Image (cartoon, rainbow, N blue to C red; front, side, top):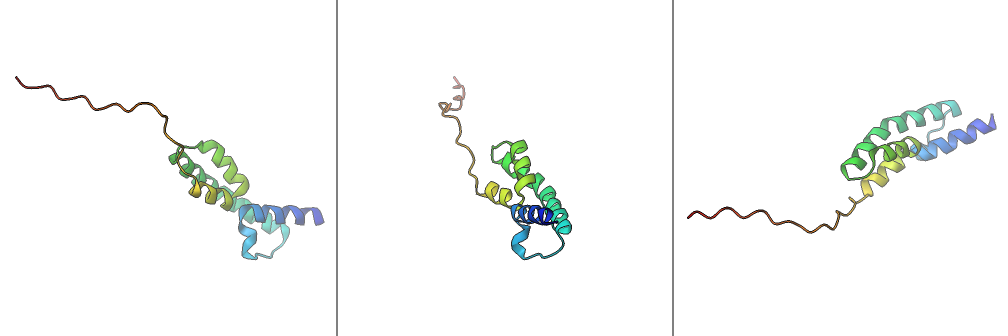
Length: 96
């Protein structure tokens, strides 16, 4: 029974839920942490995708780390644009 308590504590801390002082049975803690991670993973993926990062990778990270992944995604900057030379817009044709 001690092993499930250790896993429950680790899952609660990884999801961010354990910081709230939630004290229930290890099974409830595991289920609640999993539910939080499942709820936050799509949000994490969408935000990462809109910032130019891999949505799939961040979705998986969100499943594992819950609130921490969401916080990291919110702090991420968009990757730098490629350094291709900027093109000037075409000039309008001159009327003769």
